[in-house]
Structures are given as C-alpha cells and as structure tokens.
Length: 239
Image (cartoon, rainbow, N blue to C red; front, side, top):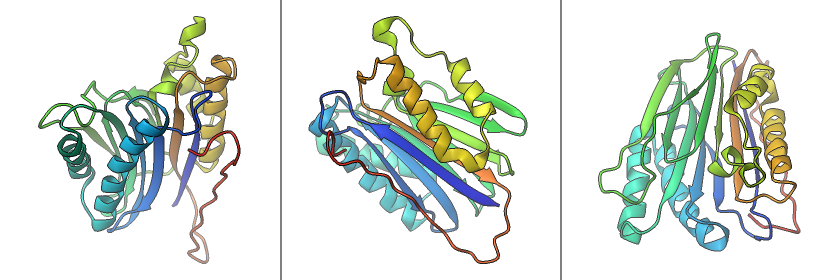
C-alpha cells in the first residue's frame, strides 16, 4: 500500500494569518496522522489557539497515544490554559498500521467525508468543540484499511463557502468530487475542493479555509522512500 496525503489552505480575505493549522505526523507504531485545528475567530488570535492545540496533538501522536486520547488531551490543554473561554475545532485522519484501520476523529464543526468499501458518505456526529466544556470527548470511528479508501476533512470556512451569496456548497457536490478522485490524487483533490470554496466566496474567502485528504492506494515500492512536498506562497499571507 501507499499512503497519500494532500493539504490545501488559505486565510480569510484581508487577514495575514490563517487560524486553520494543519500538520502531518508519523505514528509511533506505524502509519500517518493528518491533523487539522481551526482556532476560534480568525487572524493571529485564532492562529495562537490552533498552534497551542496542534502542538499538543502532534506530540502525543508521535509518542504513540491513540487518537481518542489525543483529542481529549488537546481539549484539556486548551481548557486549562484559557479557562473555557475559547474554542477550537479538530479533525484527525489517521492510517493506523498497528490496527490496520483508517481512523477518523472530530470535535466541533469540521466536515468529514469518507469513501471506503464501495460507500462514499458524510460521517461524524455533532460534538462540542475543544476548550469550552469540561470533559468534552471526540467523535471517533474506524474503518478496515483497504486499497482505495479515502477520507477528507474540511474546516467550517469551506463548508460555509458561498453562504453570503446564497450559494452555499452542497455536501452531495463534495461527495461527487471524492467519488471521481483516486487515492494517489489526494493533493489534487484537496486543491480542487479549496478552489471551488474560494470561488463560491467570489475569490475573497469569508473565513479561513483548510482541506486535508488522506488516500490509500496500491503500491509495492522497490525502495521504501518516503516523501513530502510543500507549497508555501509568500506575500499576501503567512499562515
């Protein structure tokens, strides 16, 4: 198998910093986790919130913690440091090679889509965001790891794109895009979804936007070389 991860993000129009933070980390017992944190608000204040949460999350994943424990500990860290006064949405997409499962985790309003075993659908119950209520727990679900599986997570800026102009995105439209994509095109799918969202906001995003995609494709490389590609524009925004 080959694991493919794609990320595309942008900041709110006229903001120099994005409050949506995404990181990809190797799991201690094998596999990859992609983590998205959407801090409350936008700009630098939101970035500080999301950075605090994601730093805790990636450290725990790297130490071998399970995804549910990671989400709860990230909540506890934010709740303790900010006294329940600020929130953050969390999404995690993990390929866990120790359990041979695709693990999806969320808190808050992040949208999760999954294509697995011939079914493509939106998943994830409504659960509170991190940081507000004591004892908050995540929604979490696991799927058998199989070639062809894909999962998508989006921040609420993508989900609500176009709302100001009366053309909010239909989830079914997003699912169609997932159906048409191959796991190896994870990066391409992430960028297509983001471009569509920005277009619905007339080229001026009304909120920070982030999309991450994880796909599992076939492959038996002769040499186990791992790679990562980053595109980071410098100019209008830093986040």
